[in-house]
Image (cartoon, rainbow, N blue to C red; front, side, top):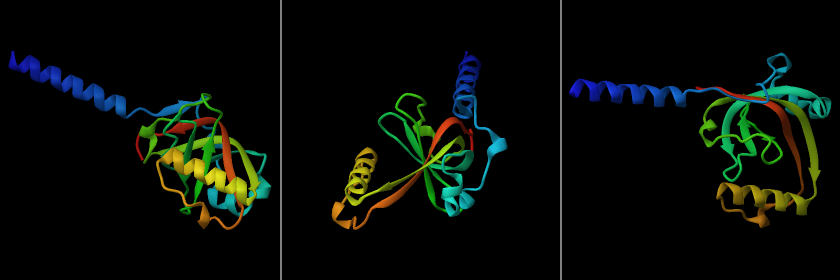
Length: 156
């Protein structure tokens, strides 16, 4: 009887471990043929804006409310936001710390100071962070990827 319980516990542990190690794909998975370096994209944003590309990075943040965006820390240490319309894809919180590949169209927005404050306040609220709008002294340029396919690897 003890052997059956032990074996059953082993099978449950193995099942849970295997379930946690699942690669997540959205929209059929990222197109690796369109992979470009984030450093090149950030240096030449105008060149890539409006183009379909694939970027790679470590997931450092995920929208806690709807899973509608995630932030990738790219190889040069900068961050790029990956944003979908609510419900199109739902990125899991378990993606944090994992490598992701996102294929989509690069977008760039110039925000005036008021829109910058609203954007940063909204992001801080979603992340449960404190935001001091008095620290915002100028507008910002927002670069993000609007994905149609994403792959989040099971491990780093």
